[in-house]
Image 1 (cartoon, one colour):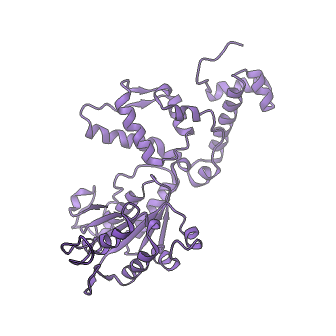
Image 2 (image 1 turned 90 degrees about the horizontal axis):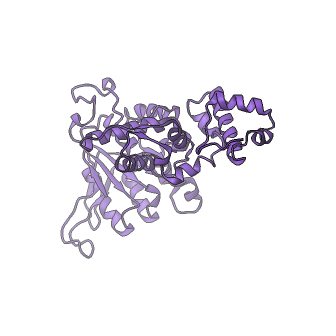
Image 3 (image 1 turned 45 degrees about the vertical axis):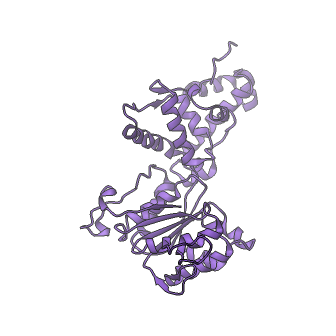
Length: 354
């Protein structure tokens, strides 16, 4: 369980409590990226921040769902109230009800004194229920009532407590599938899913990779004394772009921190990257169609990237014997040589003589 109070408007850049929310400069709370998919999410965040509607954020682990929740809160009229974050999947089911709603003294073994819950702490602010898909069905019933009526009782109590809160939830799970399996209540899903926001995985918005690396390195310059921003060689950049990032943004952030510690040179070369990333460069052979449609990759750029990937794959498979690669690609060797030169395609290791 994590509680993040947001009480001072100065904490967010561009936020001034004397200004109207509509006139306020939009606070991205450190969300970096330029892709079409991310811009669509931020456009939705801007709109939903002006309301108190319940929001459900979905996306794979590590895509930044909590940051989106913070952006909604920081740009809303509740920004001077608390933002309370609780991970429903990290707390045992028998304790989660007490964490959410509090308990009275003697409500259960070990309850030596009364305790207020996160819903009470979030009064006049926002509560963010992360990993909502991990909540037990029994507790889902009580949560549904609390969200619908904005009132509840502490565990072991009879006094009804009213709160003024906004509810934002998030999950990496497929809730409709969980509903079909009887693991998640359909009525709760519709109550949570008033405004849906889906965050694309990093592999489907690779235009954001270098905005993120710049952002993480900028943070390191503030955190680590004497840190010098590093640059990536062209081969290293291509390796990062070809990698699928199963851990999403969190994985990229961890990589940047690892590089900051282990690499002394200012330029990051291909050899400085982990083997699982450099090995992947020989396996990724096409541009994701969803990436083309969801981001700002134009048709011509997508075709160029596909040609580059296809040519490199054929060359790698044939040991960079251009005649054999041209045969595999069903094109003339001279045409292949011209394309290699034009696209500046080079082998990952020294090219053998032919």
